[in-house]
Length: 90
Image: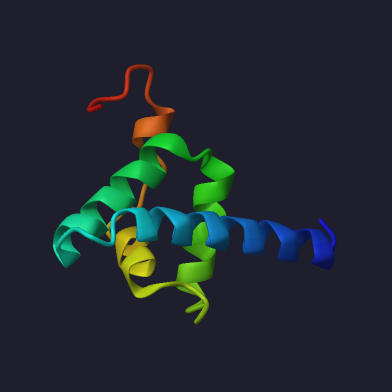
C-alpha cells in the first residue's frame, strides 16, 4: 500500500471514528466509551478496526480521547461481534 493510500485509510478511519464519538457525546463519559466501542466492534470490518487500533497504539494525537479509550477496551484477540455468525445486541 502506498504512503498516500495508507494516509487516506488513516484519515478515513479517524474521521468515521470521530463521527461515531460525536454521536454518543451526549452520554456520560463511561456510557459514551462503551457505546463507541460496541458500535465499532459490531459494524466495522476487521481491517478498519485494525487500522484504528494501530493509530491508538501509536499514540496518534489526532484521535479523540473517547475514541482512543473505547479502542483500549477491546479484547486482545480478534474475536468481535462483527466476526460472529449471529451478533448479539441491537
